[in-house]
Length: 495
Image 1 (tube, rainbow, N blue to C red):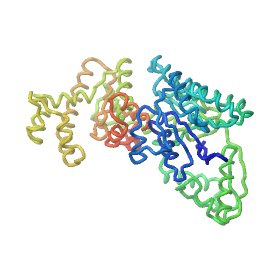
Image 2 (cartoon, helix red, strand yellow):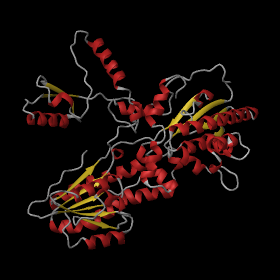
Image 3 (cartoon, one colour):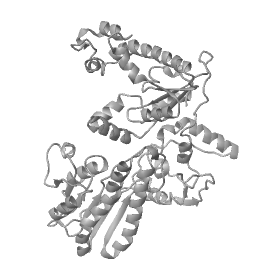
Image 4 (tube, rainbow, N blue to C red):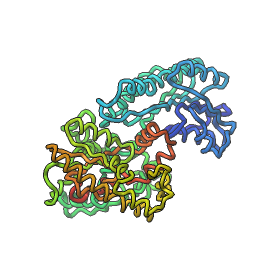
């Protein structure tokens, strides 16, 4: 569902808009866009903790179309103060966008984290509406826009608490919308979901086209057809004069109407819309769509092997070694701890990395010889920040370093595996962020990768390491992407 397009309300000089949650994302972008409107049709109250990022988007200055407000949706007094502040300005549009996320297995979510999430996502939205609704009712005019999520329409794996909060928001708003209509107050729910579920697992276009071609030839070999990749939502449907019919479903019928509107704008005749029923999936779970859906099929791939493990004769069958990898903030270390609690012998490659750099460690002298004494602290230890600055952004120097360090860590991993075998351990877990980059998949029987959306990874890194959002994104961009990790599994040995 898209964001509503607003024009200045009839008979008014400017439309007054108050937006919560403007520190980043949708709130930041919306506030910046409305405040920078060339026709100066909007007066924007942007509520956020810090205004630097918003001002950067506006060229470093605060125009008279924008006013920054400190507001905490969990604090009724803060909301009351904000409502009092804008009381003299007739508020036309209220955008409830403040929200937080919480991702992970339910048993790992603390009670405090769950309470905080509901306090912001559900009660925060309710408090905000309560604070500004009386004035709208007395005027018998206004619009309320509430940012929800695709997670408010269907459950998503490892998002149980977050989805529960968004289901509550959906119920709150759908109920409110009915009783607000007589007051000429329109309530809009925006189910944000610009990314497909697990896009990393979407097959390449060439493979999908080949499967479709095979299906069409099986159904009717004499059929004439074209398979066309879509570069935009409409594709050739709005430009091809030879098309006569468009097949739609109940949920895509409005899209078909949009196609016809575009065709008329392009001077082409409308297409006949032929609506078909979607097939129900009798095996769908509570967290999946009722229809047969590629999103559901991709969700079912979680926790499964994408390829059968390749049996390396040189690799002993015991202990069975699982290579666990994933980007910063993906949760792989938490997974390793859980596997350790189940009895697995956990090998932390990051800890081994610290050990190889230590004085007397296997990589200490080669690194000092390669990069000079300037990488040493006064106590003789290697200053990894100085060393990192030497190799960051320099692929040649980085390779020079990894060619020294990675083989040494690999040797220590093999020693730990032998130690696990001596202890009678049946399963080892190698927790290694650079497992694939270093080529260590040859040391393991299976590769498991932890994948989370980039936005969630950024949020975790910012909260955990105290970095700015921009610095967190740079850290992620310096690593192998989720899609690249999955592509590694197209060959034997992948999981």
